[in-house]
Amino acid sequence: MKKIITVFALVLFTTTTFAQEKNKKMTMEVDGVCQMCKVRIEKAALGVKGVKYALWDIPSHQLSLIIDERKTNPMKIKTALVAVGHDTKELKATEEAYNKVMPCCKYRDEAVVKSHENK
Image (cartoon, rainbow, N blue to C red):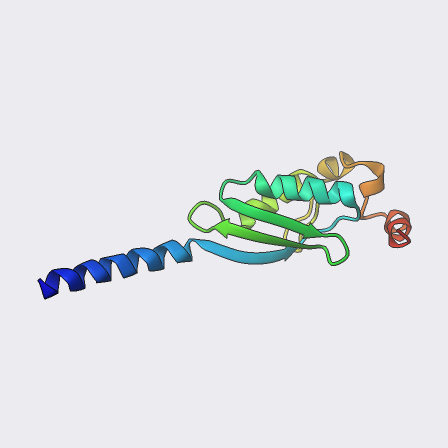
């Protein structure tokens, strides 16, 4: 009886441990300048299967994520971000994808970036 209880407790503990490891918090830098960029970036990240939470901070350009590592990885998320026109440190958006963002979102244009600094 003692052996059965020990095995049951071990199985329960192991299951709990594995369940806790599936979610991972991470951050990455994503270029953008405004509220419209924020919506686009968060929507693209949340569109990747396995992304449970996405919040992009405009001033710091940091995208905070909670992901299920069994379903996705950082490169899949970065690929989704560059597909909607936003650069990351490792991947750059194509000119075609970048040109699809609104004129106020042209983060590669210094004049646009400066215009958002005053807001």
